[in-house]
Image (cartoon, rainbow, N blue to C red; front, side):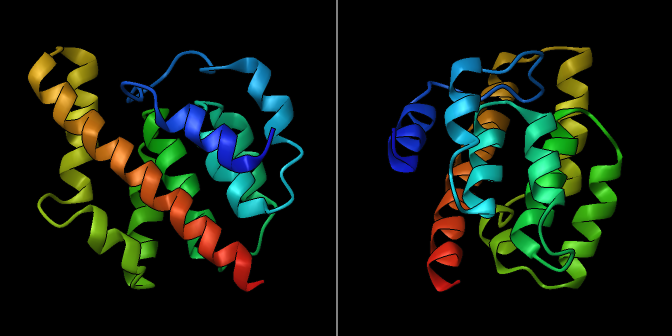
Length: 152
């Protein structure tokens, strides 16, 4: 299965859980492991809710790779780990352009606060809005990873 087929399968899900308890499709993790590009592999793990492998893979890359840092920040947010704020502040200081595309109408801090609030007290309408932001974020991250991997 090609990385694009994996992406299409994962991106066609109706929603991507904000803080998943389980890997979406455990069988895909073995296939994702064969993807040569570290950036694409890390993003696909993230899309598959395999947060441990997403962080592990992203951590194997260069420490100044903004896409991999962003992948780690999202994985930490989805684990409800407050350290994601530190990583996002670092990305903001590095002026990562993808942040401006994703967070045009709302700040990252507001998104993480809402994710934490939704875990405490569910609001289906608010959850849908934040899930849509996250799905868009993951799609943009994959597109960015594709472009970056072609430049290497």
